[in-house]
Image (cartoon, rainbow, N blue to C red):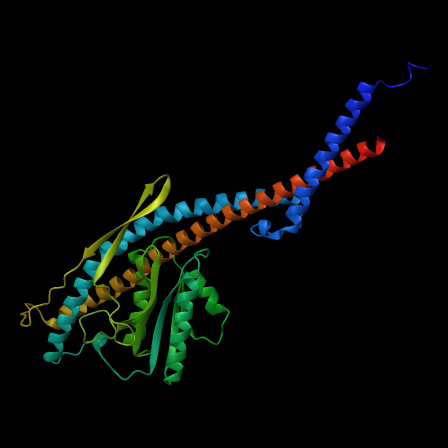
Length: 372
């Protein structure tokens, strides 16, 4: 019978093990209850009501989306450099051409020469050339210029003027196709970076509308490229030629900036960075007394097609540069949001996993305590 009785040392060791497990159980239960009773500690965690498998799938989905947005950001950053150089390099020629044409136009007005494209007549109908993007995923770029077009159409209606729209870009085409109440003369789509051939198609349509007197005024609505983080929707009067020697909008206000900000994309600490250089431009006026070897009307007739093509090409270049910059910023924000969401999902996954492990430990300890 003495062999069946447990020794005192065995009983004391079992009691110490049971006591330590009981203390371990109480300690973790108090920590678990304290976390629940103080929600302020968990306020930065999102309320995600999913099991562990669903959270893992969501984390994988967010990672894939983050890779896509990161790639689109890098592609837009590579393209915006080329578009930006085209805008900055084309502005001096465009402004010099405008100065020459306006100076010749003023001389022709003094000599009473009739030129169709400079004929200022009472406005009854206005043609609006609305330039939008070819693709989406560029933030509010397309919505801003389309809202500008809707505002201008409402202003023309309030003035009692008729209008017609020349839509350039797939996004603008789909927008106006869903609105049959808007009068659209033509839908034009482009591919990639704008070229002279693309602008020539629009210039031919504008020329025929104005010379045939179907419209009395032509306005360009596009997004002017200011910087990589800023672009402004503007309205530029294309025809007839204004008496001022500057590019003006529908209200007669100048839309040209007095200085350009040239942005250079670089890398800093493994991330994209931007350096800013300011290029000052000085405008020199033409001499008041000019002598022409040929007839001024012939010179102006030869320059007007170049003027139309150049101004439309410049608007297309400004628009594509603004679109790429907006897409780069939108994809950068999407990448940052994906990383933040991935972090929140990982925290929620770790919390649920820790809670599950704690519950299993509680069940094991409780079962062992019941057996003892």
